[in-house]
Image 1 (cartoon, rainbow, N blue to C red):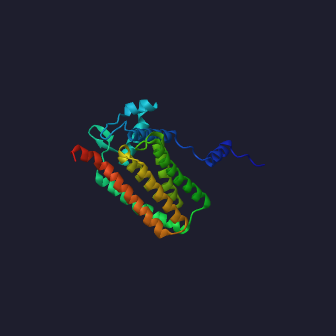
Image 2 (cartoon, one colour; image 1 turned 120 degrees about the vertical axis):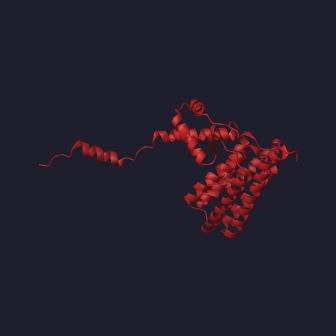
Image 3 (cartoon, one colour; image 1 turned 90 degrees about the horizontal axis):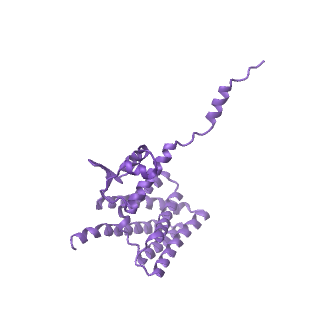
Length: 255
């Protein structure tokens, strides 16, 4: 007569078959990380502002541990830096912006050539066309409002569509390592220049025109044209960001 397997063996096999849940601490770390980024992007934490683990933990209703880990991660990402006062919001030089745009251009131009050669699915094309149209609508809405620059929810809407257009093309390339690197690069660029951006109707219409022509080249399989247009688009964006970065410096010198 066969003996039944011990209950403990059945239990261990069942437990092994189930995927382990994500650690709760991982979610708290991500929450703290995003909270600090939001405070930097909004201007609540300006350049050189010191971060208080205690205050941030109280704002989030968390212990100091995930906040401390989030600060360490942001230091590694170059968004914060360590000083004798602890972690402070990093100040970045003109060269930082130059190097980040050089990285963007090298990787994005390579990827879009691959995407144009391989082709897009109908679903990918439809979603990309929607992002292009969203930029056009933002430009039209800004013109109708009579305001000189984007602000508030309309600014968020434009930034979301602009970033999504580029990220969708990168994801269509299928290289997740490149996507991860450029996602981090784009985050740094946004934080470096967010409070100095001047989204005028002219700028939005320029972005719309580039996105429309880039997508047209990709959909036609014209890799050379897609690479040329995207490279030009990124370099123009770089020049705009550099001008915005230098504007307060020149104003301070009375130039």
